[in-house]
Length: 143
Image 1 (cartoon, rainbow, N blue to C red):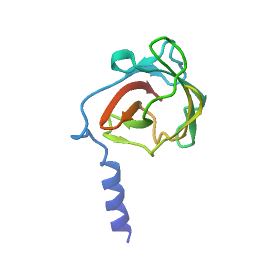
Image 2: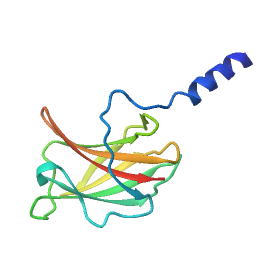
Image 3: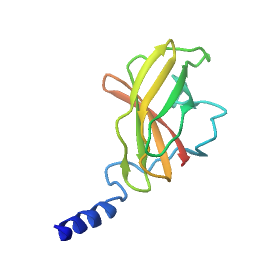
């Protein structure tokens, strides 16, 4: 029994690594306590995102992010399609739990169930999907 647990623990500890499935992309690195001074823009400037920590970032407990979405004229706008956030740790080759994103007002979104599992460099992928088209921009920081 102890031998099996030891083997399982060794596999788990060595399971992080580079992902062969994702392109090597990284966001603009920040220290987690810093806020973005300007927004993140999708290619073509269709949507701009200004994320702000509502709670966190925390390791091992829930963090929340408020996201203001504006259009090219800097006006709050609802996204045509779906906004999702994906947490990814590129140096370890894994992500975290799915994030819940809810529109709470025109151009104002709340991301909850944001869980970071360990300290280190993280990317948050802001992904807008409309039909078969998906665009993303990354926010990178170190916890």
